[in-house]
Amino acid sequence: QKEVEQNSGPLSVPEGAIASLNCTYSDRGSQSFFWYRQYSGKSPELIMSIYSNGDKEDGRFTAQLNKASQYVSLLIRDSQPSDSATYLCAVLYSSASKIIFGSGTRLSIRP
Amino acid sequence: DAEITQSPRHKITETGRQVTLACHQTWNHNNMFWYRQDLGHGLRLIHYSYGVQDTNKGEVSDGYSVSRSNTEDLPLTLESAASSQTSVYFCASSESNSGRWFFGPGTRLTVL
Image 1 (cartoon, rainbow over the protein chains, first blue to last red):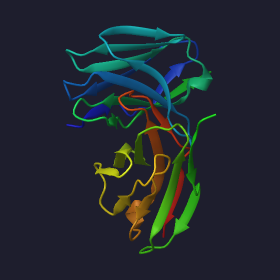
Image 2: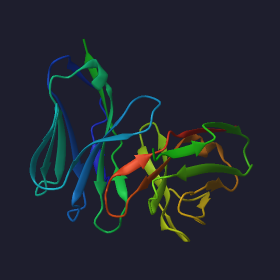
Image 3: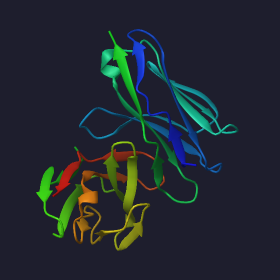
Image 4: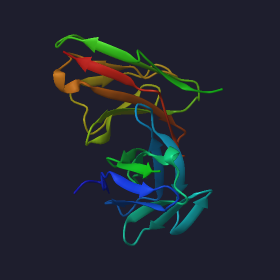
């Protein structure tokens, strides 16, 4: 079992719809979770962080965390073509100050 | 503005040669990391450092080494480049325990 798992996609969503990205992790002790966005040929950039169970909203983005089920998700409302990118889920492992990344989900927003 | 830079941005080398990739950050972060990114594998940790003179192996450290002589720099050395090391390499830094990683622009390395 991979430490951080994501569906690789591609996930195709019509413009204006809600895109839902999911991630599961194996370390029950993890406390910090992140979503990074990576455009083709560019470096990852942090878009959301979440530390406690429930929802966290920032503009069109909502991160959701369920520690009991060991999953974290990212919702993108009113999807725009500019949201087309690979989204990386990342978990800060409790055993060390290092972050483990999932392999990413490629999201495509179709006009 | 603080930043993290990598050089070179592109490198082509031959099998068996020693290659060093540079990473320099002006955030004054203690933590620095090297990742490689390959299709289907996401970002995999090569080496990391929590401060000057501190280095640690990541999940794919074989064939790579790092040294940390100051806060700003963490060069990555491929002792004897192999074709399997063809990849995009990202350097990152973070504040201690912040969980927020800042990435450099990446170096595309091709080993022929």
